[in-house]
Length: 151
Image 1 (cartoon, rainbow, N blue to C red):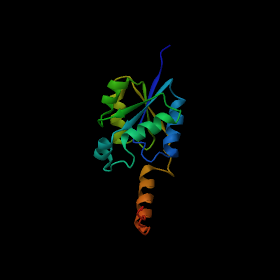
Image 2: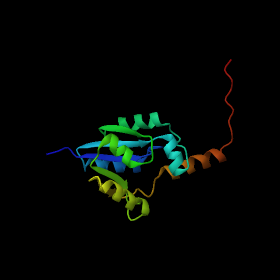
Image 3: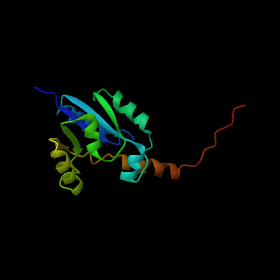
Image 4: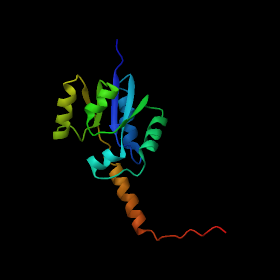
């Protein structure tokens, strides 16, 4: 019997419970789990925002939580490029992709390679976008505090 390689791509910026939920669920559906961590430039290109946490730190965080077997830095937005490097059998996405043009395109392109797209429930109450807005809102309303100079 062959090893089923799973792939869980994401920005994993401001790591939160939604990320943890996806990785925990993915772990149950494969023998070897690889997390694809999207490069800063790719996040900026595809989402219009640069991550708060730099790629190397996000790779280290995801690698260190004890759920994934390996991490892969995604340096292009094309999942076929990731497949060329990792050769995964299943890719895991939030169900906010299900039934959308981008979800259909992913299913079609990767399905042609024998890759199964598996959707998990999206964690609605937490997202990096929500956290980013909260941090930026808090920073905008907090008075600036000068740090005293050291003598």
